[in-house]
Amino acid sequence: MAKRIPKINEEDCIACGNCEQVCPGVFRLNESLGHSEVINSHGAPEDEIQQAIDQCPAQCISWEEEGS
Ligand code: SF4
Image (cartoon, rainbow, N blue to C red):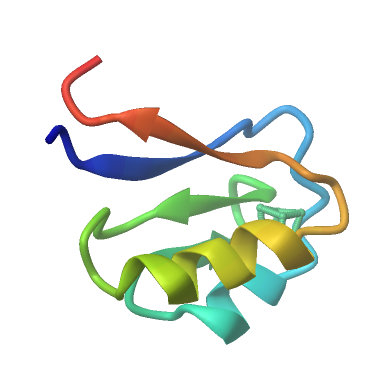
């Protein structure tokens, strides 16, 4: 089974920082760029990443098939 990785739609990100708070092993708020980044796709269990996805106020984090 292919692994899923989180992807941020950077244009929609409002740089609130919640994803980094929920899941700092995967997401980091890049204040100079004005949006968050995925720093390590596999830096946390999927349910923790899912929590960050569910809580994103801009709903701009989604799952992607790895390698797509
Ligand atoms: S939770 Fe969503 S809107 Fe907030 S910084 Fe993360 S990706 Fe951006």
